[in-house]
Image (cartoon, rainbow, N blue to C red; front, side):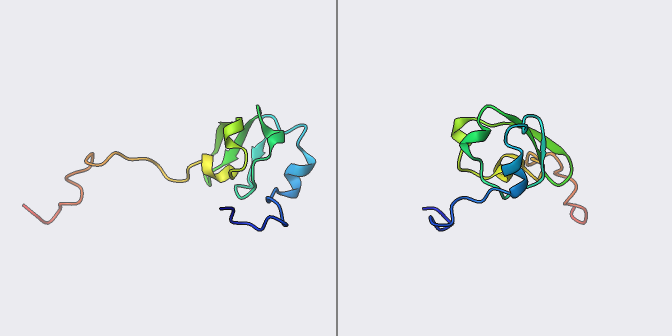
Length: 90
């Protein structure tokens, strides 16, 4: 079920509409923009709040948002810092 009304269409930032031809290897700060079929087979750098993350756009990613493919939080396996949270207990 689409979140946005069908008559509005998918949101693409105005900057990305202008630069579709030369988007290869460019930095993208607009994480809320939808990926259109024009971006297929391009490699872009999506900003995650700290550093740009390289992402290759494929056909399966069309219709999703750019921000879905640049995670903003680090993955940390559980149990690595087991003694850190147990300060007061013996």
